[in-house]
Image (cartoon, rainbow, N blue to C red; front, top):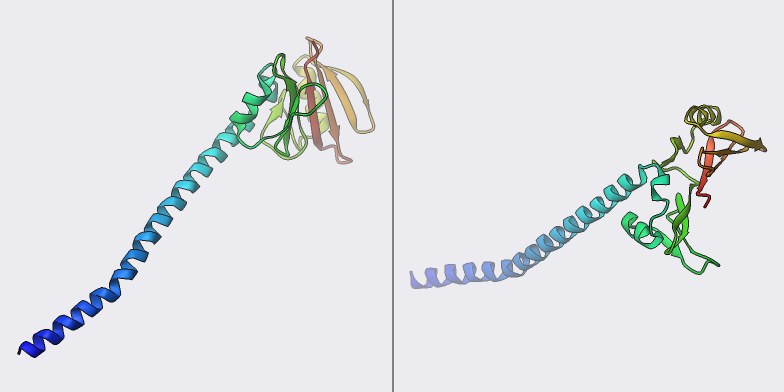
Length: 176
């Protein structure tokens, strides 16, 4: 009987010892999964913040600090060695300005949810022209699938569109 108890105890302790490392690995896996979930949540929040920031009329950036604005978007790359001012881009949206005067120019050149005066990437040029003119913009020049409009304050909006009339580039320049 003592021998049976000793053997049973030995089997139990051997099994427990064998399980101990796997229990530690399991705890590590749980920690790694928690870390991955926290990272995913942070990245998701950053992506949501950037998407919300990009779903605006980019003219609202005019006058803001370029560096502060870039930081609020989260994924903008700076090109600070411009002759005058700083240029930032995330591949779709670009803006330029000085810290003293703020952002002076904004543009988009690929798909984004941002707009400038209601004009969006991929929008039909004729629809954009109608929208702008109904909002008080004046067409100043057109040709070569490019057009320029002036708002009542004299600021410049330039657009470029493809052979199908779809807008692929819009730039807004605040005239001081």
